[in-house]
Image (cartoon, rainbow, N blue to C red; front, side, top):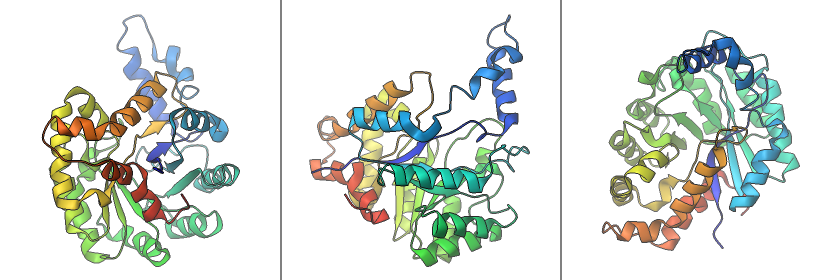
Length: 315
């Protein structure tokens, strides 16, 4: 039986985001309508992102046949020069309680900025005490994946045999995408050859070839496909042929399905989530249109089997 694992989702509560980002978004939205002012929309943004307790996520998983979701934590306060009101320990504790309450249907990676004081202790607490299953790094906050400050975090994950997901692709306003090129992950592979790495977003939307090249250079590096759905929907042939090239280099065993779904988002969130799942499940037929050979077993591996194996979780 095929298991479906979404390897990239987000569950937020009020206080998880730096307030400066909401100010930025309110200004952007207000500028789209001459009569609208930032203060008119500022107070509604956070409420439109929050999913307290993760109940919306669980309902969405049930409706669309998702067995396991992996919440990837984010620590971007230093990158935005503004800390959120919720501290990392509390966020990681909340993730752990969600995992326990759902019997492991929802798992989580810690999010830790390596430049944060006590970063290693925060990560070790998340992994050892809270039982989180990996680390999410967010280089657009202002650091390169290969910098010396990150090395102790890699070592902690390697010691415990848990994966590190590195954001590689475009990012939110106020942050800096230039830090997120997948090529910077090659230095990490060289220094930690046994470390399991996920190239989160597989370079979307700019760096597919770089992401594939880097994944091929590692023995345990995975491409995670979230944020490529827009390309898949708009230019099916382009995405299928790109995926075909990756399969020739990597095989289906090192590719992970992900959506980057925000369960609390009220602006047509579930429509795109459902569409991407359906699109991916139909991939064998779609691939045949362009001469790309993909079996149901291949899609099953990408859609969940690989994540189950990588994380060592029960099916």
